[in-house]
Image (cartoon, rainbow, N blue to C red; front, top):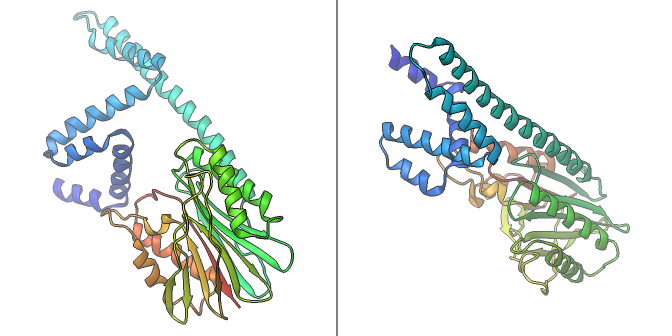
Length: 351
């Protein structure tokens, strides 16, 4: 009977949520070496070491004052004077109060940080372009979804001097707040120069120079910038270290050339401008590694091959329909596992 109940819990939504939360705790608190050691242990030993390592990591992440409060809270629980029930109850009350106080202080910090990140996410959303901007002769769909509260990916749409327009996708190394701040910096720099610089190679060189100058050491970002016109199907583009774009033509999917180094790696880089012509019904797909490196619960990657297979039958669909299909396919592949990276893409279709 108990075995049946245990199996029911394991296979239920509660079981899936518990496994997900346990994995997140393990990934956050334990080092890679510790996780490898746990995998080689028997179940009983795993529980003992897992609990000890997590509690130690939690303790070390506290501020010195809160560590002292935890120690003050734990010690009275072990100081029991036999025969004096009042002291025992007092010790239990004092220890419990101290531990609850630490939990309340940690929760307060978490809620404050969460509120600030939510404000940052709101500002990011205000800076993002609409998902389906209108350009005569073209159909577009732009999508980004952050793995955390704020996003380290950038998608952008610029209405240049008529009849030209441009799209961009970028991925700043890392994720979280520091990546989001550099993303905002990159977007501001790109928008500042894109309207006045007709040469895409010169534009990318200027962006790289500023990003290298103003970013912390060892920080970099990939950027794919493409300019197109209402008058025809020609696209001019420059790729600074981003994943090669995919072109969907008559049921086939072709990968474009790789680009030059990513932004910020070197103070000066010579970039190359490329051209591409799309005929009616053909698509250009720009994407971040949040798609191809999405993982499932077995640790498998979604991969570029799965992405290409998903795009094979997309010629007759609108960019928005293709976008919905991609997100649904990645989510179906990942299952209950939380995303580990931001997911972004831009789809252009010649009408």
